[in-house]
Image (cartoon, rainbow, N blue to C red; front, side, top):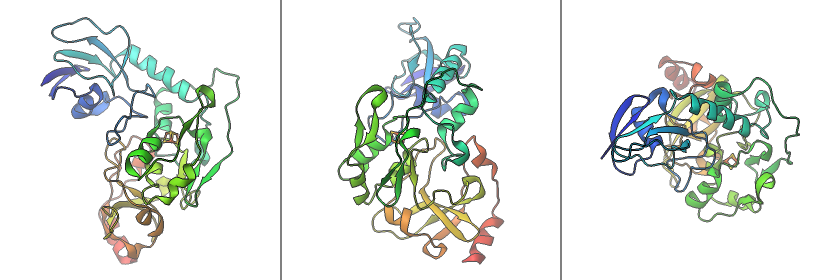
Length: 314
Ligand code: SF4
C-alpha cells in the first residue's frame, strides 16, 4: 500500500494506483479533469494533458519534487507522495493553457451541438477557458461524415483523444478505423463506416468527450436538458440491457449507456438497445437517473413522482 496526499487529503491506495484514481477515491473538487483517460479502456490516457498535477514531494524515500507537472492518469503514486491539484496555482495555469490548446481547432458551436450540456470540453471551457481567442489562424475544417446510418462524425469537433479508437479495438470484434496522418493533419477516418456492422459500434458515441460522434437518431431532436433521463432495462440477448432512456413526454428520444460519476459508461450496450428500441413499451422504467455532472444537465432535477407520471404514460 502507498499513502498519498492530494491537496492536503490523505489516502492509502494499493501500489500501482495512478494519482488520478487515488484522487477519484478521495473524491470532490480535487479530482483532475480527464478528457482522454477512460478506466474501462486499456491503454487510454496520456494524450490530452488536462489531468496534469504538481508533485511537490516524490515519496518518503526520495522527497524531491518532480521537476515538471505530470499527467495524473499515467503516473503511479509512491508512498509518501504529496500532490497539488485544485490547490496548485501552477496546475490551474496549465489547465488554462491546455483548454486553450484544445479549443484552438474546436469550433465554439455549443448552441447547435448535440453534446452541449454533457460535454467535457464545454465544462472545461467554462472553468478554465479564456473569454476571447488569442489566435488569428483559421480553425481546421472537415466535411461531416455519415458513419453508417446511425452515427455522424463531425471531425471539426474531435480532440483526438483516441477513446473511440480504443472502444472499437476493445469492445467490437475488430477495429476498422483509427487516427490517420500526423500533427495538424491528424483525423479520425478510413473504414470507420465498417464499424457500424458491429453490434457495439454505437458505444463510440458514449465515450466521445465532445460532440464529434453523435447519434443520428437523436441529432437536433431536443436539448438534453429538456429531456428526462430514466434508468431502464429490457431483456437483451446481446448486452446487459441496462440503459438510460431520455424521455420527452412519453417519447423515448434517445437511449444511452448508463454513466458513472466520472462520465464513464458503466456497461457497454448493443446497437439494438441504443438505436432500435425507441418505444416506452420496449422498456421497464426503474426510476429517474441522477446525473452527477457539473453542468446544465444536472440542473434538471426531478423527483420520484416523475416515475409515476411515466408509468401512467405507458
Ligand atoms: S471522435 Fe471523439 S472519441 Fe474519437 S478521438 Fe475524436 S474526440 Fe475522441
